[in-house]
Length: 201
Image 1 (cartoon, helix red, strand yellow):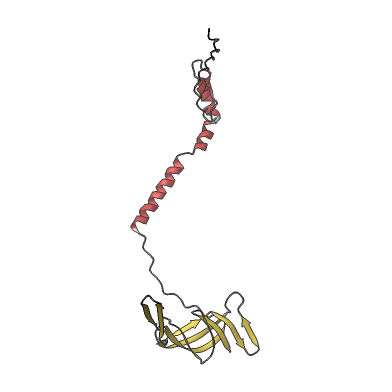
Image 2 (cartoon, rainbow, N blue to C red; image 1 turned 135 degrees about the horizontal axis):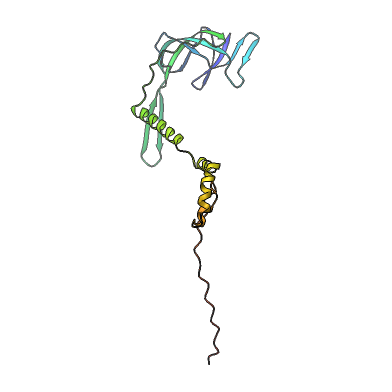
């Protein structure tokens, strides 16, 4: 049985007992690692190919050693400018020994218990302030609720005698619950009559 897995932007064809060099994996030498990004798995005539998502298979390997790749020299220059620069690079690699290629995903290891995060001191104050604001908003009726309350028959009965009084101004005779009338526009003076042109006599 063999598999084609993807790791670090590269694809590897592996089988049980093979050794491969992959990008550095931050684990100790001798520990076991599971590679689950399998693109294809084959067993004789049967072959499973990934279609949009990795195949349900896992590759178990043992970390043999941590190595460094060959040194690469990078030389850049600009002609006629006395510009020269030399850089060196060595990739960090990990050597793996493939132990097993199996169908189905490996069993997930239980995660270690973590301590609950402690809330910031100002977060508690903000939460209390938001609760206070919600209670205050619930106590004060909205503008529409006030209009509904004023439009009840009791409010209309109370406003009726005031409206029937002879000395009540016109603005108070408006029915309860109606929006307040806009202010009357200021009166404009009538235009002056134009003078007729004189004959000059």
